[in-house]
Length: 349
Image 1 (cartoon, helix red, strand yellow):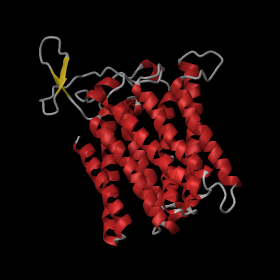
Image 2 (image 1 turned 90 degrees about the vertical axis):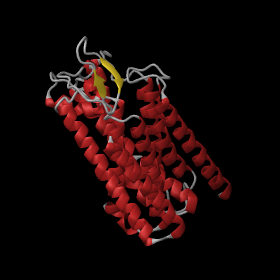
Image 3 (image 1 turned 135 degrees about the horizontal axis):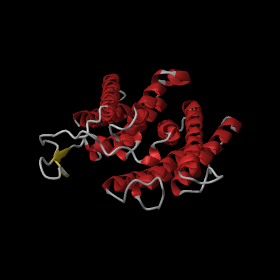
Image 4 (image 1 turned 135 degrees about the vertical axis):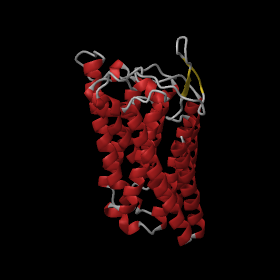
C-alpha cells in the first residue's frame, strides 16, 4: 500500500513540475519532473512485482489474492490472476502508461523532439492521465487486507489495514471462465494497446494548444502500435469467447464491452488512413479529432466494463465511486477536447 501511495505522490509531483516547466521553461524543474517520473515508474513496477509474488505464493490475507488466486491453480494462472480483477488490471494499465511514456521520450524517431515545447506538453498531458489512474489505484488499492476471525467459522470480517493478519491456506481462486490460455494473454495485450493510445491523444491536444504540425511525428508509430495491440487483443478475446462461452460458430456476439472495444479500433483505423494520405497542412481538424476520439472511446470502454450500467459477461461490478471517477474523467476529457477542437475549427474557417 505504501508503494501505491508513493507512486501516486511521485506521479502527481512529476505532473506538477512538468506543468511548471511549461510556464517557466526551467531546466531544473524539468529535471526534477523527470526524476519523479522515473521514481513513479520504479515504485509502480515494484508494486506490480510484489502483487504478482503474493498471487504466486497465495498470500490470501490480501483481499485481491484471496479472490483471484488459490493453491490449486498452476503458476501460469496465478500470474495471470494479476489482471483477473479490477485492482490488478488498473495496476497493469497504469504501469503500461508509464512505460510507454518513458519509451516515447528515450527511444525511437522522436528523440530529436525531446527538448521541444511540443514534447514537453505531450509529456505533461500524459503524466496528468497517469496521475488519474494512480488516483484510481489509491481508491481501489490491490493490497487491502482483511482481518481474519479466529475460531468459529473463520469468516472474513471488515477490512482493517492495521489488523494482525492470520493466514488463510487457500484462496477462492480465479473465476472458472478465466481459466483459459487465451484469456490469460488477452487482457495484457489489450491493456498495452490501451496505454499506447495515450501518446497520440496527448500529442493531438498539444497540437491544438500550440499549433505544431510535428505532433504527427510523435503520434504516428504509437497509433500503429496501439492499433496493432488492440487488434490482437480483440482477436484473442474472440478465441477465448469461442472456446469458453459456447458462442457456437461465432467469435463475436456484439456484447457491450466487445463493441466498446471495437469502436476505438474503427476510429484508430480512420486516423491511420488520414495520416497516411495527409500532405502538409491537410487534416488539421480531422486528424486530431480521430486521435482524441480513439483515446476517449478507450476510456469509455473502461467505464462500460466497470460501471455495471450495461449487462455484459465482462462487467465486474455495480456502479461505485471508482466508476464515478472514471465517468468524471471521461466528461473532463470530452469537455476540454471539444473546446480545443471547436477553436481549431473556427480558426481554420
